[in-house]
Image (cartoon, rainbow over all chains, first blue to last red; front, side, top):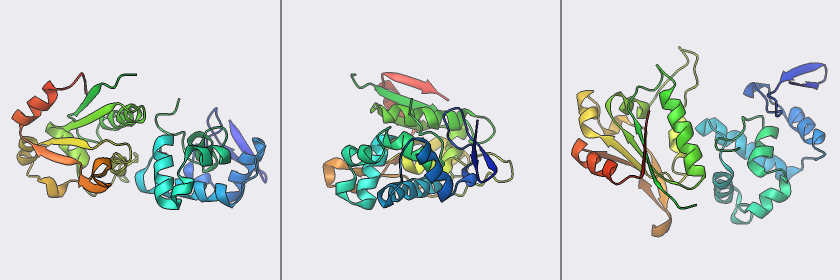
Length: 110
Length: 134
């Protein structure tokens, strides 16, 4: 599969996750969200940037339980809850947010 | 689901085969499902935890930084066999520091790596429900 943007083509897997991490940019993230009927606001971006940093440091996309805990630690306790993250990413915070962040599907995610 | 005690024994050097990376992947999946997970590193497996690994020359992913995420996954019992380290001229100082936050001790940061003798490791193996060799 591939994602088209501004005449360029970006390879993805069958579920729409980017194959090449370095292809990622803000526009591409917004485009993927749009395809799901979502618009990214600053709260979404905060989580996406957090995930990019997490991947950079640990070379994995965290499982949702780990993500929730780590977000609470980094972005504040009120944001480290499943409720907050599911409101932002109703298809599942780890799964959906990782996709928009251009990361592989989280390990342990089925 | 009742929690079982899982032990993953890692015996192989990190980058010559897929075993080490696959093992780590399975460990993370098991831990995500809140199983009780223990890791042991023996023989060439101790090389998996070496600091400053660089795989750019062989074009594979350097997954060593992922070991540092184990604490986030509540994997805090990591045993390295002393004899295997010594035979290779290594000590704990050569290994990536791995820590976890202890929920029962006001989230104090604690060391996850324990260097143990092969006899002590035998005891640890004895206590497990499921043992997986990589």
